[in-house]
Amino acid sequence: MLLGAECPGCRAAGLGLCAECRRVLAERSVLGGVIAGVPWCAAAEYEGAWSHCLVAYKERRAWTLARPLGRALAWSVAGLLGGESRIALVPVPSAPAVVRQRGEDVTQRLAREASAALVRVGCDATVERALRQTRGVQDQAGLDVAGRRRNLAGSMVAVSARSVPVVVVDDISTTGATLEEGVRAMVAGGRHVIGTAVVAATRRRDGRPQAWMGGSGHRSTPAHGRDD
Ligand SMILES: [Zn+2]
Image: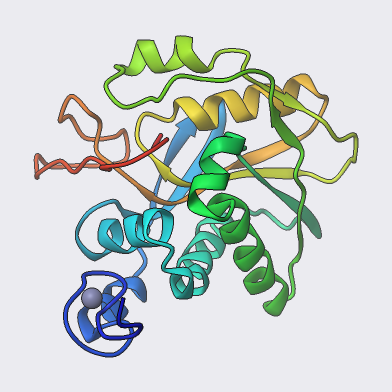
């Protein structure tokens, strides 16, 4: 591979992120709603350069995108805060096999970048690996909302007893089922969950918009891996 010969986001010829991907990754939307009884926030809709960049980051090891995507996650987290002096970002866990295949726990790395960005603006944010998978789960691709819920129910457990308020974070939200399970597990572990934050959220698989989305535009679906 010719390193740097193409944009890591869209593969356009050139050095590093192309102007269009750079422009899009600097944009922020206010997207949010409620999952598992707590507010959630996304920095973008999962489409266009956002989806290209997230797929490149997760599946093609475009690690240079960790920083801009992590900043977007930080922005999303900031949308949930109400004057907390300390918070812990808790990444949803990935299966060990997925981490091995990708060469990195991509969600954890985004959480670290987001935490660093939050610290730079004066928020005492740390990353806490407080969620573990209790069992294997099926690949979510091809499962409907109810199927995803069943697949994930009881699949995570809180493994830390700190008292810092928590934001559960992930890269992409499709149906919200993963975030829902993460929140359930943290609450069951006695933690105060402020909300959940993702970089980008997709439209629902049935083509209907998420709760926060208006209009009837196109849908976009992540192509790979655990994606909700
Ligand atoms: Zn590009």
